[in-house]
Image (cartoon, rainbow, N blue to C red; front, top):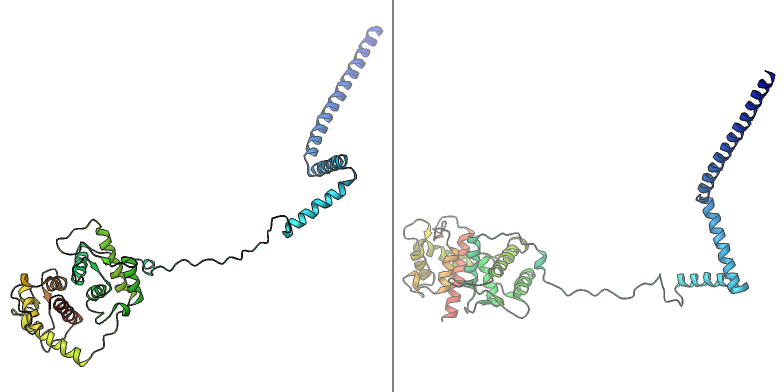
Length: 330
């Protein structure tokens, strides 16, 4: 029994030692793996980076020493000197502080019209009326408007607000409008504006009307009309001619009554009897002044009635049409 007990105790002691050694081995392996992890973390820490960079610098210095001998300090000074020279822009071809001495070239002046965005949208009726104005303004019937004819175009398009103006008298915006639309050294092409004509470039004619009407509506103030005894007398005679020509007393002039008005207006110097016999300029004048119903409104033309600006425009534009006709056919 004693022998068996001693054998059992001995076995326990041996097992304890083995277990202790295994625990110690496990702790050592755990500590070893933990240390390895910390070593890895340390290797990538900021301090490790600094130390590694220091080592690299030392190794670089050693390599330069081995290749250049004792001249490593001079080499470093030379590099520093080159850097300073580069920053100063001396002798290296690099100048960060360079300032251009070139002055910007001004672009050629362009007409001011394109900067004014067209705000008038032409419907079919307004466009047709504008085409008639173009046709009336084309005195020599060559399908183009020279500067003088352009003034007539402006006069009629503005309902006679620019009476007596020359091209040089026009607002600079209107002058630039002509130059922009016509082009330097050319006249304004209005091919397709006359009744019965066709054109492949309808948009070009629309552009002429849109730009010009926009300026007249938004960008240009017409000259102030100065009343004078001669003007007052002329208008009084014109209003009387309107009233006498309105034979049916409905305050409207139809085509036949318009012919009578033209004859009275010219003191019977123009004695045509029918609308079809009128010259094209006088026909187009009626077409432009007439409303949708085919007549000219002359309300206010009778003595004692209050006249309107529209009546003044009818008189002035008819006078211009008559003058143009007699200039073309003296």
